[in-house]
Image (cartoon, rainbow, N blue to C red):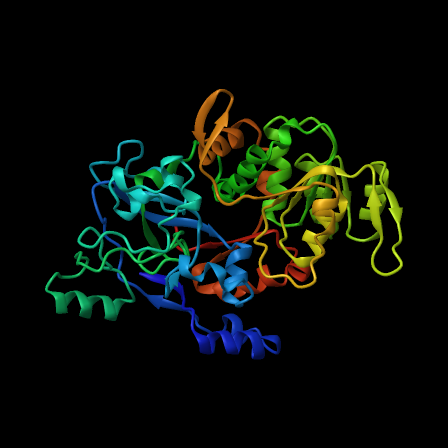
Length: 444
């Protein structure tokens, strides 16, 4: 099958971080470590798995950061390469093992890409604390190989996989004693191809049926929208009485605005975006007000009752007023610093962007204003309306009940062979106007 594969190497890092500043060819062109390859079609690893034909797969900011080697290396032990990228997945089931009963062949499904201990092959008595609690996005065994003898690697790049399988006498698609490679997420995993390929496999825990009334271009947003839903529910933002600020212009930021409204937040929501079409989307999804970074954002802060003071040296600081909850969906030094500076006393800063290494980040007001900084990742078991549900289940329910403006978030769709054009649109979203770019690996 055709797939877009990425490998993490030291030469790739040097090229992307140096010559990549001169030409995007060194990031995602022919000289890069990203390319369209032939892979062995995945086979079911066990009875509890499904094989999926990918219909659409989004391009995420974390994909862009990893391909360009801009992400923190801290998460490297929790992935394995070379990997077929893509974790925002909509597909159709083409094969289901006998242990899968909630979906069947022909069903449209979305995929929770994060791996539970059970999917790694561990028996229930060996699951980590996070997986026992339903919080598998923080699985504590993600950097460990799956149990030997339970897992193998039948679908590396075509030639290598067939040769290795033949050498072991297991045949194409056979399992052997290597065990599942480390990795927390499909799409950054050597053994489990992501959605930038024609087919993939997923464990029954990862697969959720898509309601008939949800169109493909909305359904493919389930993963980024679920991140917003998880952040809203975990942060306690629904109980906030003061104003809420959402920083960011991408799908997760816009999805967080939607999540706040669709889950019942009735207070004031301000969205910080950069471009007019993003502002229009933010309002359509539920924001009361939009501001651009800089003076407009400062005026919104002052409008909450904050007072500005100028130190002898340094940027303006504030006291009084402020935003009770801030969602940083960017993860840059500037966005984190702004969130800390704009928070009310005892406010909460929720990090949904992939914040990494930062220089000269002033944390003074974390202690001076008794702020709470909370990281949120992925999805998991949520308490919602008196029930315990997976974030994806809640997200899909709300997509049906409250589809406002979601159909406008996917702005670009490219066939798989045009992945470079897709990446160009996603990287240069200021020029392309992209909000969410998706690949279509197969026709349907």
